[in-house]
Image 1 (cartoon, rainbow, N blue to C red):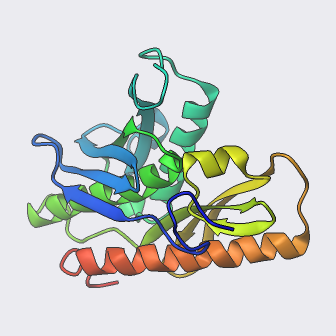
Image 2 (cartoon, rainbow, N blue to C red):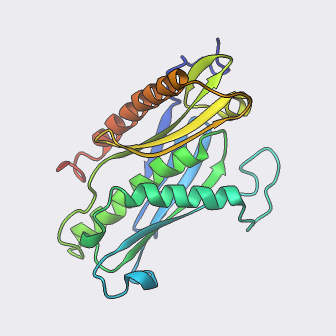
Length: 240
């Protein structure tokens, strides 16, 4: 099977990143996965949710939105869909899984993910870009002496996989995602443990063997992403 962009079935799209993309944010980046582009910012807030008041523990949360012309047709501004809410929760859960919240102190880090161009995998790009912005914000807090030690506990990777025309495919673009019989989104830590497995038989059911194949393919792609993260975070996360 030939893919529309001529990639191999197990090949990631090209990754580009511009760190410190937003002047005012404690951490930020423009993250590109193929033609999908997401601006991620991390903002440090001195407050925490009510349930964490006087606990000494911090919090990490996320918001996600798509700009009106990030897709082929205009999305109404300020519309919060069920999909957007679900992705916000996914990104927030993923980021909290690799932060020692007790070492963050009573502060919240808001990670905002704004999709400026969508071509499949926007939630995946938001997890990875959000992680980069989060690490940079925490590194800034540590460098300024606001927190005594870095509280990132692991690397974080995410990728989509799917069954397309009977073949297992890595990192689906929008046309591939739309036509896939099965699509999945996988989030993993650098240690190899899973954080999230979202899988759906869109047009057909799938076997246990196909599931195992998709998970193996996702793990391969995420390993490549984490190797890339280790390269860019040699200074910030060299202790991991």
